[in-house]
Image (cartoon, rainbow, N blue to C red; front, side, top):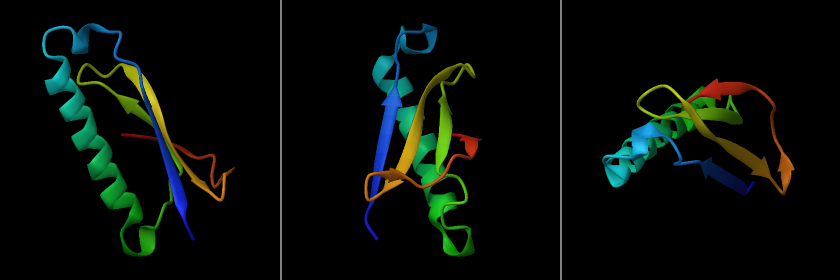
Amino acid sequence: MPVRYTITIDTENAAFEDDPSGEAAAVADRIAAKLAVTMAGDHAWPVKHFAIRDTNGNLIGHLLAERMGEPIGSAIGEA
């Protein structure tokens, strides 16, 4: 079944000031790692919505997985 992934990231904080593209790349790497783990084998999407944090540990956004336009979970995890 098709899944829509929505990623929201707010870059208005200190982690993005000196090297915005480097921080964005680091955030993307953490998101990719989380997706690889949560979609693998028997662990297929145990977490459907999770927080995204910058390298300083600040909350900067979230990722939501939706099936057919409807949220498929409400568990909160960390990226």
